[in-house]
Length: 179
Image 1 (cartoon, rainbow, N blue to C red):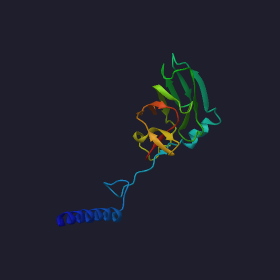
Image 2 (image 1 turned 120 degrees about the vertical axis):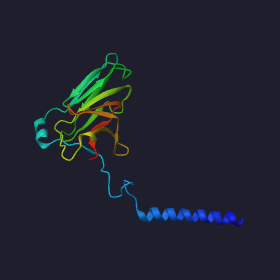
Image 3 (image 1 turned 45 degrees about the vertical axis):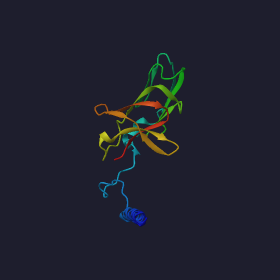
């Protein structure tokens, strides 16, 4: 009986020591190197000169895409390829670029979920890449309930300066980097 009490006391003391070490040593965003912090993801921005060339261009396009044939919708530097059968009925699709200074797009019909993924190609030509490694560029959707961008699998075509991804649902999407 005495051994069981000593063992429980030893476990409690050990747990308190581990807790104290964690509290007093602090936490870092990079446990292997506490001096390195990871940057928060941020939207890519366009260079001022490039943004001015866009001027007051219409930054909205919409079109009904038939379910049997699929189709394509394009707006400036964004291309949406909808395969046949992606949705059950002919559906209104749209692309909006609310701010020409950042690489952020709103795809509609908002909240639409696909039976087959929709391919989106987003160009980053004219991006301000100072201090950014191009391989760090990703497509992410904005989770409105958390306010955080969620990165999705994508590929980068460095030669054509585009990022390509398959979307399973519509939301707001942007080109982000953590550099």
